[in-house]
Length: 397
Length: 92
Image 1: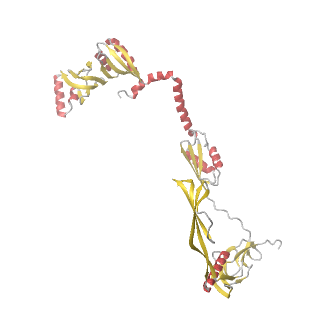
Image 2 (image 1 turned 135 degrees about the vertical axis):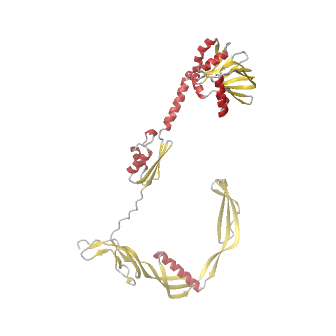
Image 3 (image 1 turned 90 degrees about the vertical axis):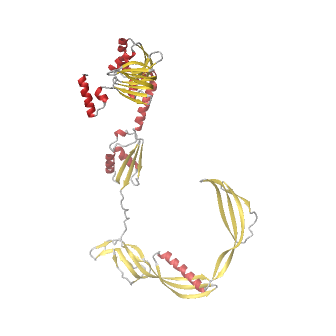
């Protein structure tokens, strides 16, 4: 407390002074600029005080002048500490080497992480980084300025819009933002757009190519709707025709719909079986014996034992067997017809695309026989009638 | 310090309301309870033991009595004393 660290560095000596003119000695010492502290008298009439090592040697001539004698009791501080450390030189050297090693190892770059790259390979980025002087086991202090590094790496990586370099301790993170290029469309050969079915055109929109037909025009299957040949007789150019053509198409359906519907009904009779489960194998515990029902359904319900979030390999399984009866329910004629038509419409939509619209339906013929309804229905459907026909190059023409 | 000089100084001190220790070169004693004592403007140690300390002043002397007195720090004009202080006396 009474010795500052500066005094500690210089070295503190506690001395015992003996003599008749101790007060004079203290005054003389102060007058010549020495610093004494923690001065106290012992019961034996001696004076105990602290003095730095430098002042200790300047005190000696004053002792002679005043006829006092001095005796050193304790030595503290760095000079004495160093003297002791000399005896354990290897310990000291090891201590110093440890700190040097620590400093050197922590000023190396240990890992480089690359983030955000998708198309550019990590190897390529690391190679570019190496050219700029950024690689594992490089000295941190030999590294170029981070902002310069970012600029030069962005310049060297053509596929990157921005490269960010972040240094955190011994780890470097390279954040890459890649440039986004639009997907290239595959090249298409010149072609016509033709009709996929006999139809009446309701709408035609040509994106590429020359529309040949008009609205309300009747086309046959295979007729050209949008031509892929542009120009007049002298100058022609073949292009891949593209566009949207919609038309009214007629579908004839033979529909058969039963007048009796089979319905599965639970009778309410059940039988329960219990199983114990261990390591994926089940062992029946109760509910032995044959199933007393002709038709039945089995429902399994497994309960796995768990502790916190871990699933244990034990559990139990409940198996419920429910008796089933099949009832035959009579269906009215109108109901049977509408069911048949609905099924036919669903079939049309699944075949001719989701954007198809059933415009009208017309029952042409209908008869009831053997508990079934037979129908012939004509559907008028507006749908896309686009099909592709490649243009064959007529050479020598 | 001549008589005239002293009179002049006293007059100046009274007039300007200056502290006396500055004008007359007197000791300034700061005491913290009975355990710490700080004396400025002394003129050297005359006697020091664990129960008595005598300091020379510009005029006269200052006597401190107590138990277990220790000079914590000492400079040419200041001294810092610790211990149990019982009595302080100033002699002409």
